[in-house]
Each structure stands twice: as structure tokens, then as C-alpha cells.
Length: 321
Image 1 (cartoon, rainbow, N blue to C red):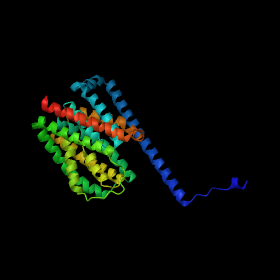
Image 2 (spheres, helix red, strand yellow; image 1 turned 90 degrees about the vertical axis):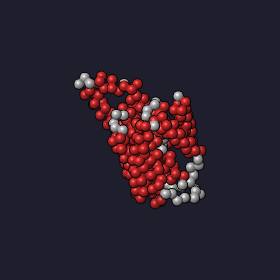
Image 3 (cartoon, one colour; image 1 turned 180 degrees about the horizontal axis):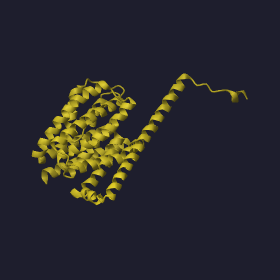
Image 4 (cartoon, rainbow, N blue to C red; image 1 turned 30 degrees about the vertical axis):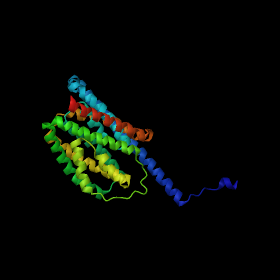
């Protein structure tokens, strides 16, 4: 009887651990709920817009517009859907996947990068807000990365606009070779050891890394994650702060790149941007769940092989066809 009436006393350490676990569970639940609420809100807005278009007899005109360019809009929805699955599960690869597929579809390099960065302005903004709220940021690292990254992004956009318009046939195989290199980097990540113990940290020139990363991301349509984020993590830095800070810097350079492309290329590529954005929005609420279920090593290998194969096809078509 005495044992039944005894009250279990928890140690302070146990209480602290339980509080941390419960806090993490609450945050995870809140994040999932927020994503579903955002998705529901977007569906309501889209449904309302479609209703008014149908009521005013303009729905057929919109459908005809979306069917232009061999139904490119619908292809972009599929590309955005697949790219967001990869990016949401692996933390990188959105720009690489979109660039390789758009090159296969024979879209010009300036329009590819302009479209990807315009769509990514929204997705990286959402990711930046989440990381900031969770405290996954190093403000000093963001400042060192973001300012030179913006400079590099603007220079990359201007260079791609000039080169891409005048030397399109030469630019495509160059960008395809670059995406093939990123595919190789993704394969390396699949077989690299995750344990950072014993890694001797090397000094990194952060402003130079940000400048180069911003330039190639803007010029090549992607690559910030594999290059910049990958460099910091391989150097033994804390992944949580690296990914959070890198995401915010990525948003800033993406916005700068998108604005530059608006003034140089224009906004005639809206069907690509809308398709990528809608495809990504559809996938975003489920990306967190996929992260826990998909085998990461096999995902890295599959994506790396696909990117390399598609890049080789683009190089072959640009040189021999």
C-alpha cells in the first residue's frame, strides 16, 4: 500500500530534458500546422480567383493563355513539384533540378535563371522566416555572406543577360557542364561521412565565398547550397547555424538577382515563374514528412545521377545537334 501512495520525484535534469522534448514537439506541431494553414489559405485564394474568372466568363481565356508555348506552364508545375520534393528533403537541389530540366526544354539561359530566382524569392523568404524564428541564425555570418553575395548575384545576372542573348549556343553547354559538376558534388555528399568529429577547421574567406557563390548561383541558375552551405558543413561548422544563415543570405541574393533580371530580361517569362511557384507550394507542406521517410543516401545518388545524365544530354544536343 505504501508503494502505491508514493509520488514519483523527478530529478531536475530529467525535468529539463522533458521540457526541451515537449517544446520541440510543440514547435514541430506548430510548424506543420502553419504549413497546412498556409496551403489551405492558398487553395481558398485560388478557388476564389477561379470562381470570379468563371463568373465573368474569362476562365476560357486564361486556360488558352496557359496552353501557350506547348503547355509550358503545366510542365513547370511538374518541375516545381519535383524540385521542391528534392530540395525539401535534401536541403539543396532546387536550382540544379530546375536548370537541368529547363535546358532540356530548350529555354534560354537568361530566362531560366530569371524564372528560378523569381520563384525562389517566395520559397526562400518562407524558409528564412522559419529559421529566424527558430534561432538558427548567425547574424555576423549573414552580414559577411549576404553583401558580397548580392554583388555577385547582380554581376552574374548582368553577365548572363549579355552572354546568354548573344552567345546562347555557347552558354548552354557551359551551364550544363556546371550543373554536371553540381551533380558530382551531390554524389559526393551521398558517400561523405556525416560525422564532423576530428575535422580540422580551415579558415574560410567568407566574403570571397559569398561573392563567388552569388555569381555562379545567378549565372548558372543555382548552386548556392552545394557550394556555400556544403563548404561550411564540410569544414566542421554547426549545420544548424550554417543552414539557417545560408538560407537568409540566399533569400537576399535571390531577391537581388530577380530584380536585376526584371530590368534586363523583363517579365515575359511569368508562365514559367507561376508554374514553378505553384508546383513548389503544392509540395511544401509535405516536404518535412518526406524528409523523415525517404532514404537520404539513395535520394542523393538518384538526384546526382539524373542531374549528370541530363547535363550530358544538354551538352550533346548543344554541340552535335
